[in-house]
Length: 249
Image (cartoon, rainbow, N blue to C red; front, side, top):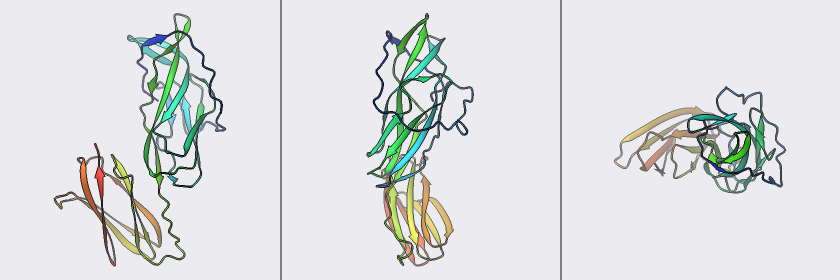
């Protein structure tokens, strides 16, 4: 959750009717703990999903207990989840309560069948309700800044029991801002090499891994690269395979 809420009090008391559907999730209090900061949300990275495969995971939320207004700490009585944006198409969200009270554990069920591959940084918009001069008032909406990430892969469609050819699975997402995933399928034990080049042909990255038969992925972190077009080459014992991707901001 945000390390602190710095908000402007703007509206009088307003209690919403709440959402029609509630999540059937259970907060993960074993792995998501309050570390005495103003609020906690986890995990930071949701388990990876696959296009056209049903998905059902849980985000655990421990709301903050205070907000800071004009450098004055004030009690947050509860927060309301207004929306979750930048969520994959085909996926929906269901909080397990309308109001999340401070210092208690709640959850948001992330469920559905994704239809488009990519890397998604979920934006969770909340409204805090504050005890201000013994009156509960609604503060300005804020967005969680921890960037919970969900990655959706294309299904490779490869059957390891029948395929006899080495194949490259094109990178997802493309374009990308930080991390992109380049896959391959090898039908036999082999040593696979990844190289990344800029448009001048200068090598920017190199990685090798030995792999038994199966499907694998290079998780390429290009966050240090300048925005632009790059080329990759995946090489095995019988040849090499090239492609390109675009690095944004």
